[in-house]
Length: 288
Length: 273
Image (spheres, rainbow over the protein chains, first blue to last red):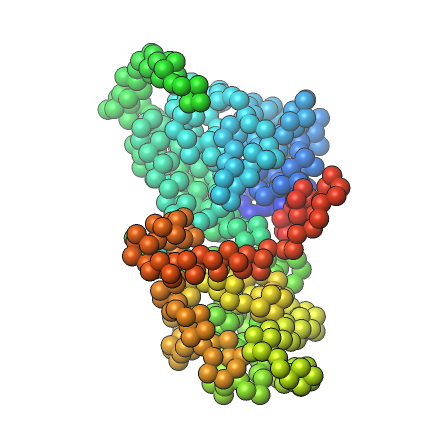
């Protein structure tokens, strides 16, 4: 089975959900016209990234009752969509979120589980921690979604792999930093290396949609990528420019790679569990 | 390892994108640059031209009667090479009455008055030309506080404030800035014979390496001494960074209410754009 995956490497307007929605709908149309089956938007694509006190005023509820989501759900009859937004739950906690929409339904919502609150980041001040890492079923098989810092940690992609995801969809608003004499920023190099590593280690597809543009002095570097189960780069977007990047994803590659390299078959989850329990029970209280 | 080399193509792409984005998103298309004849303002000017087009960058020359002829000529060279609109507004008539009123005024006070007179002109031209004032301060001088608060430090956006002086020289070469501007001794040109390095007491080459360890690599002062820097030099520079921090932040507002600007009223400047 083959699908055409599209990555929407967009700039956003900070706190202007209506304007960002129009851009999403225009790109959904364009992607569909180019033959895309699934279109992935970056982290917080409907709101912009550096929200601070705007976080609570731009929050949405991902359902057909929400006027923004109603229009996205309508568009999801043409192709599946992954959109980034702030989710306000019924107890009024605010999460950095990405939703998977297909055939007019909200199939899955991921809440970012790792909120970077160090260096230039201050997410933990404004957002609640997600508490769930789950794969979900789609017409393209079982997929998983992670948001930026989630995949800077090794465990979330590992958990999604074990939960059955054969394609990992990563959404980012990654600020560019670390200018040296290389043609890429350090942050770009790091993310590309680990995405390639996840594809290789988990013999799965890894697609990363990263935004572009500026917010105050921060630049977002784009460079969206798709790696196949062999760890080969099969599509990539330009740095620092808006782009719609298309990738032909041949899901039969999973069969071929795993026939050669049965890492999933041989993964010893019970051993991991046993050792994890030992490590956690031996640890002093402050290490738990 | 101290490696201050930068990929100038990448720096250029990010910085021109920054200027274009931050100017146009607030409804402007033009900028104003105070062109001193030195390397920093030349780099800001070249980047602005690349980002917005030559007709949208106004170069303002603001000589004092004691400014060196070199400064004016080098600024003129940039204006001609880039083919940009320019205006020359001497500050002599603005500042001399104040100097005469206080004849004992120190060089420091004079320098500050001149820097602030130039700020007044730039912000006035900003209104007249409908352009934002582009900053020309580099990371070295911002960290050392080698700048006049509300003078040369005043600007609407600064494309070069995260580049050390030695990195700016690399970018200047890549941009094709005339070699005599890159090579000459950096000076605020506030009085005759003044040079940055003479006044600071060390070279940019030396201090940039130390700042890179202290700031970028998070070395402690002791780590820097162990890495081979003279203890006195490290102490002087670390103290300068601390003492001048007030120039890098907005003045504190005394908190009384539950929501105070600067503490818990938090928005990026690009809010809504």
